[in-house]
Length: 258
Image 1 (cartoon, one colour):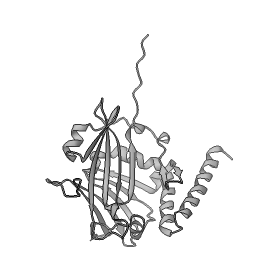
Image 2 (cartoon, helix red, strand yellow):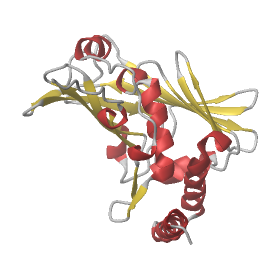
Image 3 (spheres, rainbow, N blue to C red):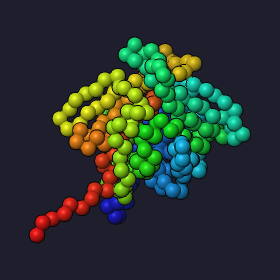
Image 4 (cartoon, helix red, strand yellow):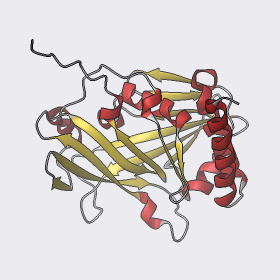
């Protein structure tokens, strides 16, 4: 048996064990099945990028109820559409006392479901793309197909080594701050600065014991020397996102002197 086949089998076995350890509930099994689809990204998914970024699910598995079960949070808006329903999770920038910042700064994430309540599209608003540029967001999603399992933290660690690199320029700090405004906090590190923003999810109901999940702390990292956006981490309606943009860059070849 080839090495890659063995690795794939072990990964599947490990994920099955992980899915079972997470409670044995069907929502985790469906999340695991969606993860498996990531191994054949173009077969099961499509990406549309314009003012918004949308991930389309060609063969949907997840139900709307799965998101409530996994995140313990409810959408800000629940609207009927021609295809089914649209859930919008709306995040508003707040200060240290969770008071809304004026003028208002907000972004949203939309989940679109068909008439069977299965997820068919996941969209992110223009402001979110300021901290997660479309091409980098797409390549980070594609890298999930080769993710390693972190059993202790019940997370998947994407493998960027499996993907082609991106030649696009990274956004720079002045452009990002022009959209997001001043941060709640700035952490000064040796070669980088971490700008911390706080966004509060507008939601009609939060399950008892999960109130802290409505507050989303977003950490944006800039390189001190180049002023480039090099990383983003945050939790959005229970979904943890962490992207190191440098891992996806196609580094230019260095010139050598004769």
